[in-house]
Image (cartoon, rainbow, N blue to C red):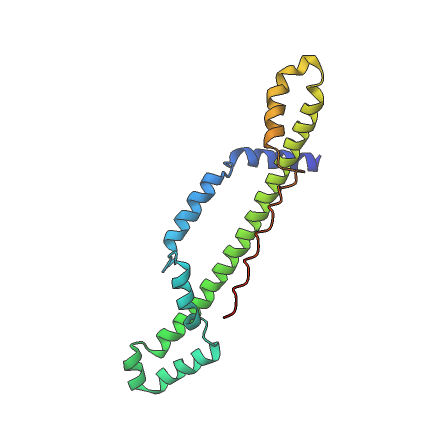
Length: 175
C-alpha cells in the first residue's frame, strides 16, 4: 500500500512538472553562456597562441605574485596588486571546475544521444527485416516501395568499394 502511494505520488509529480525538451535545454545553455565572463569562441590558431602562456607552472605563477607583493616597482609595472593576481588565480581554479563539469555533461549527453540513436537503429533494422519478409505476401505489396528504398539506402553490411591504390610516381633520374 505504501509503495502504491509512493508510485501515485511520483506519477502526480511527473504530470505537474513540464517535460524537458532538447529545445529548452539549448535555450538554457545559451542563457548560461551569457553569464560566463570572457565567454568567446576562439579560432584554433588563436587558441594555440594563447596556450603556452595560459599553461604556466602554478609555482612560477605564485612566485610572480610574491614578487609583485614584495616590490612596488613590479606592482606598478604589472598594474595589478598581489591580491588582484591571487583573486585571478582563485577565479581561474573555480572556472576550471565549471569547465570540467561541462565537459562531463557533454560526455553524458554524447552517450545519451548514442544510446537513443542505437535504440532507434534497432527499431529501424527490425522494421526492415519484418518488412522484407512481409512483402513476399501479396496482401503486403504496399510495402514494396518502402522496402526498395530501404534496400537502396541501407549502408549496414555493405562493403565499400575499394579504390585501387594510386600509382607510385616514377623516381626522377639522377643527373
